[in-house]
Length: 166
Image (cartoon, rainbow, N blue to C red; front, side, top):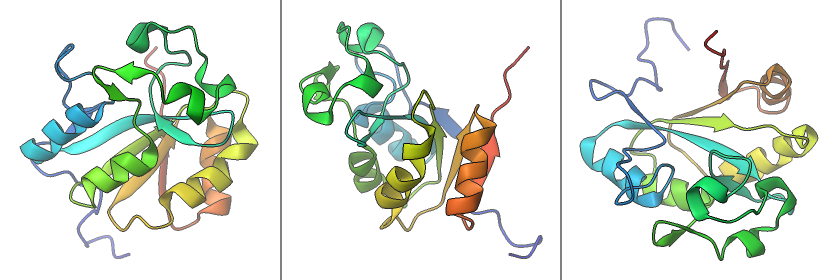
């Protein structure tokens, strides 16, 4: 890519919405409603990804479902089937597939991978989950090992390391 070419991850003047365009219970964070609101605004979407025990990628920030769903379920120790009963607002926890289907490549995505004890399962899960997506996206994480793993296994994918604010 030429340095003078347009950046495919540039969201334009509306910027990126953090966890979608969320606003309390009406539009919960990392929900399809919050992502639809971001799309309506024409903004890019930043969201969080977690891996279930059966290698499904969910769009969810916290390690457990207590704050958002009033459930003690731990995302990485639960199957997608178990977690599909939980609700974020009135809807199930979104999967990466449902997010990609909703967005349809219309805006850039910043996908923040939340790595727990599942580092080595991420590369195949991301490769499979993003295989058919044709829109612009970047993968980022606080874990430099994940960024290296993406570089090795998905060399054409934009990636970045998130630095803690300290």
